[in-house]
Picture 1 (cartoon, protein in one colour):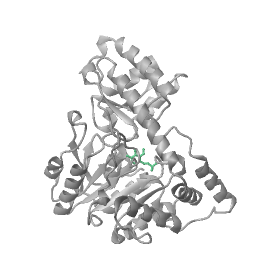
Picture 2 (picture 1 turned 30 degrees about the vertical axis):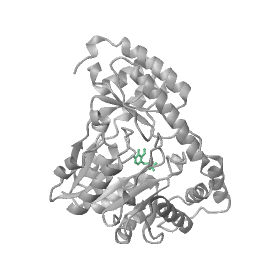
Picture 3 (picture 1 turned 90 degrees about the horizontal axis):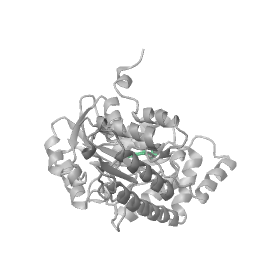
Length: 389
Ligand SMILES: Cc1ncc(COP(=O)(O)O)c(C=O)c1O
């Protein structure tokens, strides 16, 4: 009775790990893709006031005007590009919905979508749901998973519709250099394909680096759709607000899809986003600073585990550790660590990349220390029989 479309995609493999972890009472969870910080109080208060004031009805389908104006102002201030708040910005139910809308509205059945590996799993699911063909471009751990734009160009065919670019990256934590992004934009324009630019981690960059947005290059509006979100920047994943920035022509079409699925994004949550954007930004900088310290801690500790190595990621809140020397499939290692050490990581194979595990450092430093102690001991005593690779 079910559609082939939905049967063609797998349920996230991470659920089985969670089931395993639930059997132990003392797990430390370093698999999370969300901030562990509490949503800043003024943002929460704004959502509460919105409810108290009766903002509990549908909102405008594109998003509440004040929020769209603030988003357009932010884009102009930070990237120097003008987007018309009325016609070129649409507020969505998180970046996840924005991503889905963009893929569904851009790709025809049979079109090819270039996905860089390792990938954020919903990219693959979205391509499949659109009946498009994912075309994978493998990135190399030795190059810290920074793409070579000429590899992307080689993957383009007459059927290519779009490429999905994610910087800062999940799961690798890599931040793409400006030259790489510039070349990607040039290629997209030359070959007339779209870039879906997922920038949900844009504020989480370290070591004095600044995030370079794909929409900050000149004349990109016809070829780039930006997917963005309030989730990570303000630690408000559960409030579900994101947005799309695109040309007027595309945005009008995206709106049909958004309206059909959501009518509008959650109104009190959008009002909380207005407060977040207008209010002090110290909380953003505080969280960023804390993540950077945790990153340093986790990278040092991972590199201290025999058979494990990890480059220093420049963004997001993930370390992508190389476990190839251990000679064991990433899923086996993750299962072993849950059972033997009560440490929950994510297998690289779930991101299309065997030989690596993703370690989230969106956790407090004490938990990170304890998890790394446990992981080191468990890896050292790992039975030789587990080696399969
Ligand atoms: C790369 C990436 N894009 C998009 C999202 C979706 O985020 P949200 O829907 O909370 O904005 C996530 C969430 O983890 C993500 O990691």
